[in-house]
Image (cartoon, rainbow, N blue to C red; front, side, top):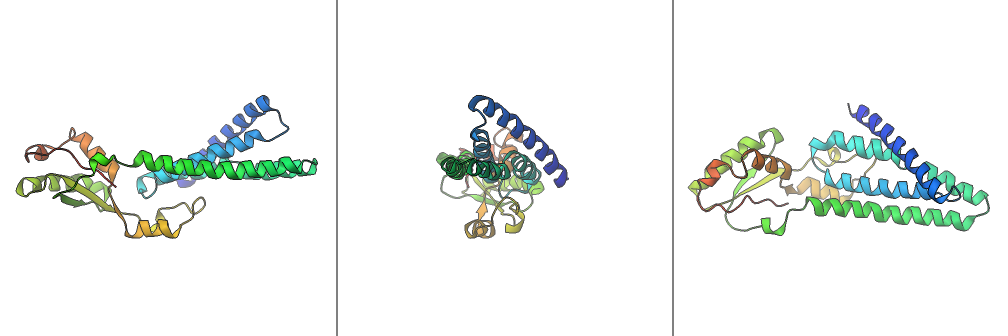
Length: 231
């Protein structure tokens, strides 16, 4: 199935690439590869955003293959960039060839950085959710068991000083959390994956929605103010 997702994504990305390149060429003319530059900038943002937003969560393995390998692989155009740069050099326009290299490299790096930090900000819980004080710690080892574990944690609240639940889950093994064809396992990423604990945020949000914000056992516990979520 992974290869099917890659194939479908590659077809979609290639079609989008051809369409956008032709649109830009009609507007700017074919003398300079503005379309390829724009395509690579957009692709860099998308791979930076999706790669960061879906990192460390096995539920998004197929989505990552579809978007990061398939769509971005078909959409971005490094081989076209190389050929167009050579064409500019052979046409006696070395300044424009260097400009193509500089624009592509600099703006693609800026774009993938913007995608990465946009995803980081989007997935970061608000500071208001970070509270202190006693809590029941629910360790979520398997996603399919998150609901029962959170139910059990909620039932413990009336018997102690805790008025909130903290949910933590062990991250994926480093080798399983990246796409080797698209990402590099850096020392910082490996340390984060191997030693870090983080809130399985989407599972908790799904649980909250299912229980209409707070489960009954939490509501009966007394002065429960909110369900705390933080990374």
